[in-house]
Image (cartoon, rainbow, N blue to C red; front, side):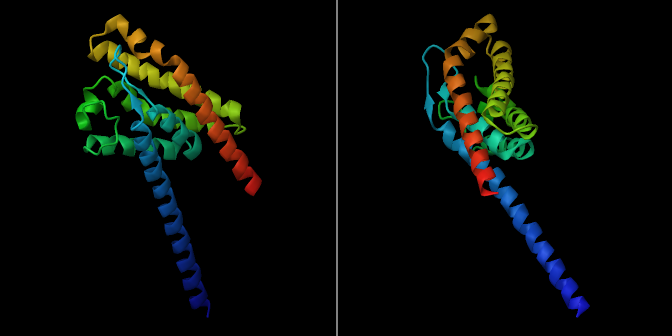
Length: 196
């Protein structure tokens, strides 16, 4: 009897473990696919090699909702998918590994795991509200544009022109993206708190 009870408990624990592991994997894969869908919404700008895209909004949402570790994993998976040639990057670039290491947007792309991690980390440590989500999103954007502008300055020979070409034209849109991502994260947190 005791042996049967132990086997049932052990089986129940294994089933819970595998169920939770499957849920975590699904969240990470879903996060990477969400950013891939956001990347499809792209507006090429004639005066800069960097297109206006909803991609970074997706990265912020993933980081704020999934947290630092899962957000980082989702964005690392996203980059791996793109490097393997899957059509997950914005369609205006070269695609595949070329877009990841040679395109004008490579510096932005390579920071995605760090952006998601930082936004998620800030959201995890403290009261999860709009202000905290907005701060996490803003800090994530600082990392994003630091990496992106550094890449433009070094690789594409824009030099000092990298700031007007890669930043000034995007400031207003980025503020909107941060506020929208923060709003979604805060609303989701309120919904979760109400269900408890």
